[in-house]
Image (cartoon, rainbow, N blue to C red):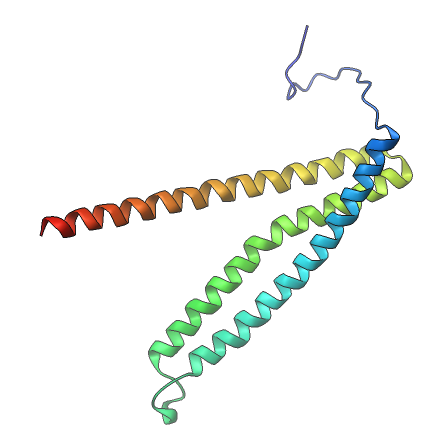
Length: 158
């Protein structure tokens, strides 16, 4: 009798990690940690760019004595907001990747089943986050295309 994967009834399992599998997981964890560290650096740069470029755009103005035009301040604020939003969105998958990689390296080094499970839980969270974000982005694309097509249709009727 097969049970559902998400069924919480404990059943003895005999899945083991072979030496080749452990070697693959070890290499995946190294590359994952590298990509996560590069991701954290990228997030830091995005925050710095958001703060400095947003301020620079906000201070651009025609009348110098006023300290900045309203349009420049609004543009700088939008730029800063979106860059900080993208940095925040990018933070979570990078964090999950870093946690997956670190826990995987530790689990393989210590032969610890609990750390292995925690590592895979972080990998699951990474894929779930990216999947939900992909669904959201695809819905934005579909909405934008519908908006454009409806706009074109209404424009052609006038």
